[in-house]
Length: 444
Image (cartoon, rainbow, N blue to C red; front, side, top):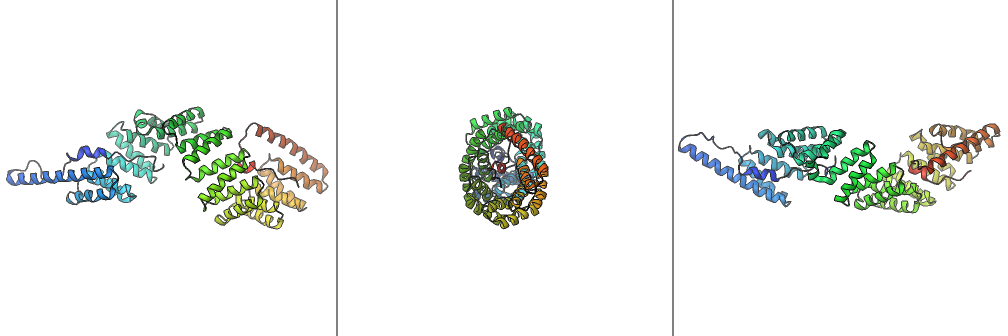
């Protein structure tokens, strides 16, 4: 669950209780003048504590956390069993990023006042944020037992249950009026994800469109719509929504990668290269960004740029089989066969089931007239992808050169059959890997 998914419980809850807070003064049944003096001192102490906490609340409302903290600590010094002060200190520490200390403060507040709704709710938020989702859900459930239908606790429990993949329970909570009044766009976004996971695409799109009507630049919703459209192989629509997601939030590498990827599926290599290049500039230490620059440059036939980008990707991630395989292809196309072979074999050392490395190594061996060796590599590639026509064509060439006419004719017939089937699948919009959208290499 993302930190912005859950919400800090309203600070205003505390304000209503401060002036009536019970302190540590003498019991009300004390007799005599001394008891009256002690009760009077306790009352003044409680009033002062309430005043300090009220001032701290006002400072918190305007974001002055550093000024509020000394006031709260003054109260705790004088009255260490003041549950409201512990709860408020927890909020301050939480906002300062001191999760462990904030948890201790919240738990102290709950220990001193087991019915403290705000402290428990904020504790649940903290637990969710640090990934202790089961504990967070239990905490929110305890809040709702004491405050049924509370908007923030309902909303946060719904998000926690979503994180735990308890989708039906999450949907039941997030669709309530209480949750929708808390943060309708976020609730609708998650309801859309739940519907999508269940295969109800139209229902999911309906939730997401409602979310966008309330929050136009909601990057996660644009991204979710794009993902759904891509699953439906509606690539033009997916590109539009990936573009919107990227425009709303360019800080996520995945937004760049997905947009560039679907542009490649549309064979718009120039625009894809622009998107990936921008990603590599923004995330210079991300090997994935440079990798996709490389394959987009390969797609548009710029092998020099492809080699540079793939080399940079391998500098950042030297053992990446995909980058090794792609660079092997590019280097081979630039006429450096021995280097290409070393790269492709390194890719297969990293991943013996890497189809592209197997296929391109087989092609390279055919080009080098090492036909028997090529057949062994290509047969392994054929086992990895039985329906790939390119492998069968390379086997046809190798067998033809070896004079094995009958076997060659069988592979040629199989190539023609598989090639027609691939064209038919593509015409039907079958999903492809981005790498599969690259132009086919010329025959040897």
